[in-house]
Image (cartoon, rainbow, N blue to C red; front, side, top):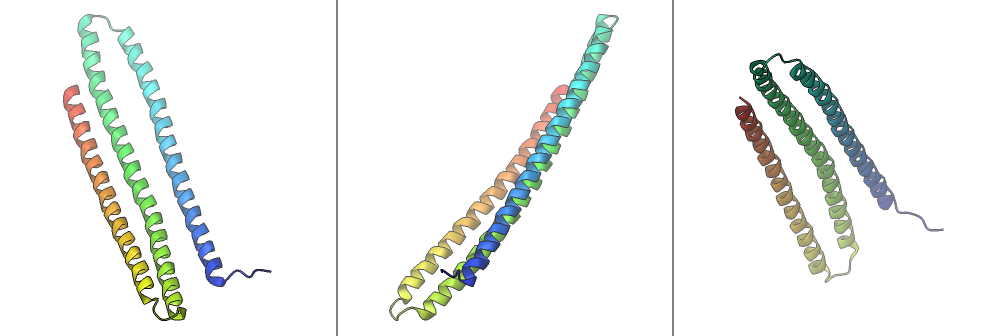
Length: 175
């Protein structure tokens, strides 16, 4: 019978735990997104019916025009609130998933470094260059990961500023 080394077993357990954390975070994010959109759609439908009833009971053109202006401003404010909620959801989700991925990458790096060090100690002489090359690959991978993480954070920052600018523009147009 094949005995599973303790290192492999521990790594498998850690990896499974990380996958489950990622799945939990993703599921929670999907539930929050779905809940936000269902609540928003329900509120928008109720508001649209309320506005239609008010428009249908307008007594003259002036009242109709006044109602339309009021409703335009209210709708712009509600859209701005929805976009802020969506932005908050996206930022929170990105942060949560980034933590899970970063933790997993750090654990993989620790495990890989420990395994390489252990293998290097028991390797035949002359293989130092191979281990040095592998360590350089790992270092390059870590640097690439850091670059991607920074770029991802920049995308989130740009998205936040775009949403803020868009909601400000929408509010001005409605006014």
